[in-house]
Length: 212
Image 1 (spheres, rainbow, N blue to C red):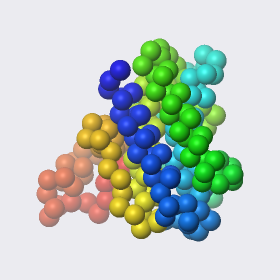
Image 2 (spheres, helix red, strand yellow):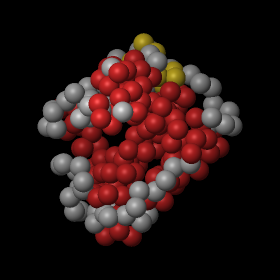
Image 3 (cartoon, rainbow, N blue to C red):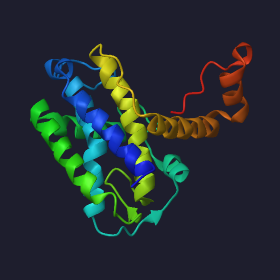
Image 4 (cartoon, one colour):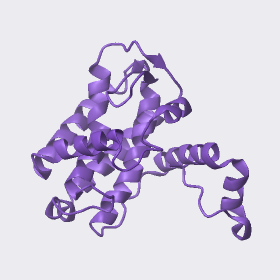
């Protein structure tokens, strides 16, 4: 096994370690760095990025259109949604439900999923999969893993900042994948010239080239 599957598992192990941090556990019910998320709810959302993969792999072959990664981000509703739009309420509610039984139970679920994925991912077919948050499309398994690796990278930073911990580093290969995808998303949103200037010409850099 190699490539995105190794990178996903590496990011998942980093996420699992962060979920066990005493600072996260002790701040479970406190506000996080993200509006409307508690630390526990944010931890639940981070955990979801791991937990959803075995669920998707176990599901039946989807009937929805299978799209590439950039097509996925063209369809997701949360990118342009307001904080209290329905899709963001669903996302926060899902994190809260996963956090409801406490940090120990959540960590145990993530670690069990990691053990399962370590066994099944190496030989898994790169078939189309679907998760409930997507309305009418599917992704290939490896593309799903790429999107989840990005989510874990971003939300590990969010969670660490929420409890005044250093952001745990991902392995270099996983970081490179995430940065590459974020750069492509930033180009899609702001255009290539803006991203080029942001990375190479401070005197002409735009105020932001945020991917989302």
